[in-house]
Length: 65
Image 1 (spheres, helix red, strand yellow):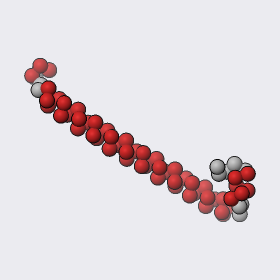
Image 2 (cartoon, one colour; image 1 turned 90 degrees about the horizontal axis):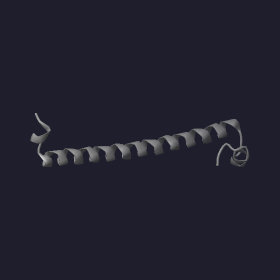
Image 3 (tube, rainbow, N blue to C red; image 1 turned 120 degrees about the vertical axis):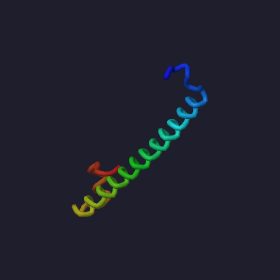
């Protein structure tokens, strides 16, 4: 098959489907990142509570912002 025998409309259709998939992957990655950050914050707060520190003390020590 020659590159000249490929229909331009078919190529355009293929590239737009790639773009849609790429956008959905980026959105999924963004959501996963937010979930991971939230999990880390929760784990940090649980560790602070288990250690017996108050939130003020944890802030002073730079454990939370």
